[in-house]
Image (tube, rainbow, N blue to C red; front, side):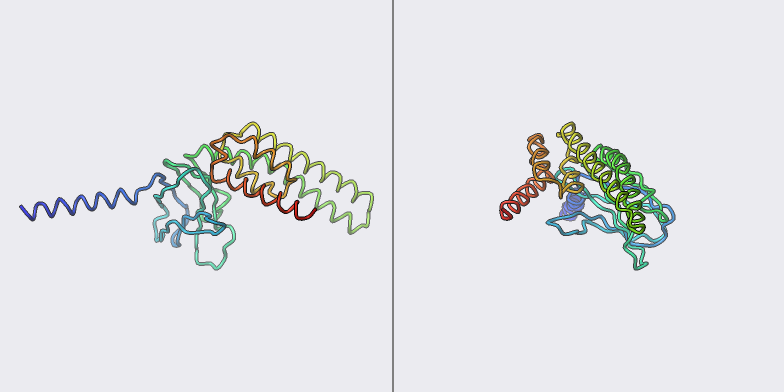
Amino acid sequence: MLRKITVILIALGFIACGNETKGNLTISGKIDGLKQGTLFLQKVKDTTLITLDSLVINGDPSFSFSTTIDEPEVLYLYLDKKDFNDLNDRIDFFAEPGEMTINTTLRRFQNDVKVTGSKNHDDLVKFKEFMTKFNTKELALLKDGIEAQKESDAKKIQEINTQIANYNKSRMRYILNYAFTNNDKEITPYIVTTETYDANIRFLDTIYQQLTPKILESKYGKKLKALVAKRKAEEAEAK
């Protein structure tokens, strides 16, 4: 009888341990072409990148992580290929509780990534795709500006600088409009703190003030609040 009770208690112990490690977010996927390496699941905490979990890949390119997040937030998959090169080895994605799938390739780890299972990530990808149009045009103008400087063409330099300024204004207007029409999404304060952190303080404050109560209390809502307070303090000191 005592032996039977002991077996039951051990079994319950295993069940309890399993429940503790399961978490509310499961991330699984495959890295085609990967034979060996270590995959890390990471997040930013207090400005420091920390590791939540890791997995040694040895032959099987599939992976699975289980973790707990309090709310939707950006996580990272970092692949250590032992090639002494950190470039192009980290994927950022907007995670949210539930089941997510991330598939990519070893050859184009960042560029071939496909993420499913997160509405926030889908929205972020669409936003980045649109922003790429602004960034591509601005890079082309900067290249033209360098050529104009080599030729000492002052008139052309002025024209290019005016065009760059106009593109920057259009970019800011787009982000402001996006924030107003998506003020109930977690990605909105994240976008502002990563894409326009150096914008005019009135621009940042206007976006912050129109966020919904839920988003104001989110991780990135609080981060935007801290950024606005910091910028206001800096402007006050400069006066």
